[in-house]
Length: 445
Image 1: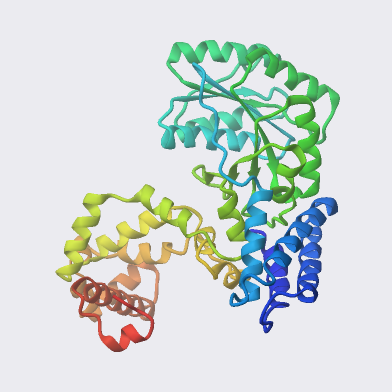
Image 2: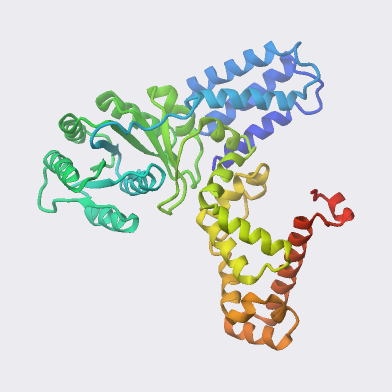
């Protein structure tokens, strides 16, 4: 995410390294590089100039105030604050008023509207404990209704559709009536898109909005389209006056132009960000967290929140007791892997760790990375999974597991050694007996 922009901003900050303080000269050089980085990220030049002018004013204002602060770190802080403000300043919630709440989804064809509709339904169901219904009002795109049907079945929410009806206004109105009958408290209306903005599409979606009076109108934009996305958003907002923006495909080769320009251009907040293909890969948009990720500082808060969603207190206590008794087994290891997998895309998760985004830039992390380990463990007998020492100390068992999993004996042996080392380390940490020489190497109790 925003890899190119992050790299160029990092280069701009390096201009300040070796300096004892911020001066007009080194500030001007850094500002020039930051502005170039933004323009190359497809941010409108006017926006980039105003943004960097504010940074310059703040940096010059601190010239004689914070002499003991590293200039590079100070500039990062200033840029982080300004990026946060540029993207909205703070999280903007979704309006869930109304009985039922009606949410209208708009955007161009290919922006990810239909997929977002399914993701939003799941998010409302699991995070807000709502009973959403999705509505298929895209009556033009081939298989659009089928796609939404599959998504609705995947996230287990009802769908309203009228396959033969080509009147989206009537379909939407009928859906609201049906939602009330079924006890659904949120209605999400997926509308048709076009390959480009056209008058016919605008008239149609305007009629739908006027008829159903939605509590929330969300504009979905493909973040990979950069400045084009911002221009499209402005055209839609002029006609629809939508309430918020949804950025999709943030896990792709995103330059950053849309995320950084859209709030400035249309005056509407970014409310959601979609990152990944899984249906649970949707999150509310936090400008400060996104600014931190753009600057390569990670997003630990989001990782913790994802972990908490999967956290089971009773299971954690049970596991802690087993680790203290040095009874951690392969079944426990498998359970922990499942929890990690549920947190989302591995590369995206690791990129949230400070410093890891740059390190992983050219690294391809397979989301099926756990498959090999799962295959090995599943080739063990139930007795072996519960008693790792049986496998760790027996060559014949390792050979049998290798054949059953399709792996080599060397791979099984290496995995067993790594598991044993991890198990020992976890036990030492839990009992406070971790060797001091290892603590000096970077581990601390």
